[in-house]
Image (cartoon, rainbow, N blue to C red; front, side, top):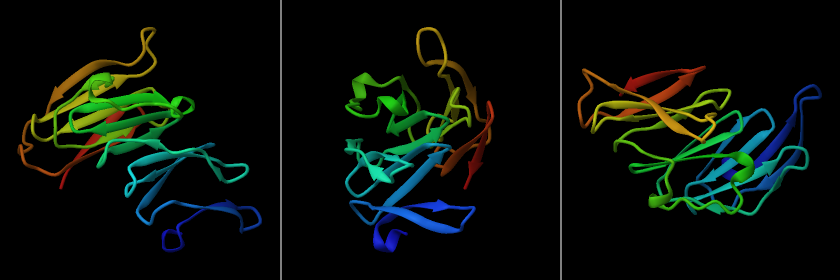
Length: 173
């Protein structure tokens, strides 16, 4: 409940909110995939893991201000400008998001999404009219495995991307 800065645990079978933790600021999103739960605090530019069993927040990890964050499986993608960082959720504590340490460089002006199993990350760029797909499960770690040109997208368009399995869907708003 964002008005009260609460992140809660709903015991659905009993329809009871049986745990809650207080977020650090009023502007936050909760990202969840099964037992992986993250609070993205946009006000303080942090990501915090939530233990779903105890509804306790871990120590926050700083991300670049204005970063776009996505979660799929246990894979976290953080996009800040042209820098795309990909990491496992259990690697969030102590992670740094320096631009020169990015997993990949992608075009500016767009969004990011992660496939439900965490095997693929998609970054869309209106400025360069591209969709970049990064495979996360390679032997050498995440690597770009496809870049597609998006014909018909204006360079100043407001674009978003969603992932459906290993396929991206791009929205031009």
